[in-house]
Length: 123
Image (cartoon, rainbow, N blue to C red):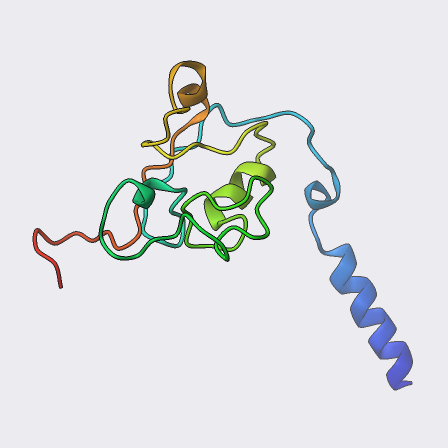
């Protein structure tokens, strides 16, 4: 009896999921993605700054397709994952990236910088 109850529970659980989760949309529904934040979503802006936290070398980016990019993550960060989920053809480039010009900035830009804060002075 417990096994039957468990099967019914899982059936009801699975059938309660919205059907939109099972449909994969192949088109980009959002025109641009602008990312703001700290090191969690930094797309490589900190490579330009000399602040002692260098991330433009291995092992940073070892799982990223292009290798080290100055990210504080090993691969895709949450902003990149959101861009992939929204079907962007390219990840939003770091605002300080020399390639972030012209048509590239029309898909959005990553303004995030590791160690950023809202105060006018360092902690």
